[in-house]
Image 1: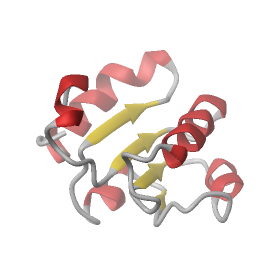
Image 2: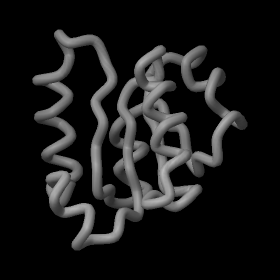
Image 3: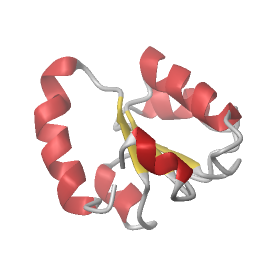
Image 4: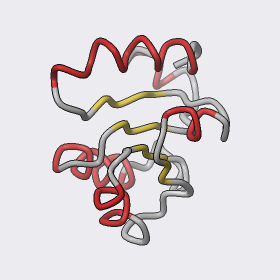
Length: 102
């Protein structure tokens, strides 16, 4: 989805991959936007500590350990990749396979 699409298509779910400091910033920002439903922000991080830091802090309906777990819960409209830069290309390939509509 491109920024110009936001006006023409309602946003139901936003997925954040990575819950380090940048992922948590995106989680906070996206959870506060009126165009995203309060329970529409979902997140994923393989690190147990990172997941535990955000559980209960936001209205996120799911915080999963793997991309596959998150994908099994349904599609997303927007994807935020907030992982270390050297993981972006590999993760982007997996994201486009599991979320072709995003």
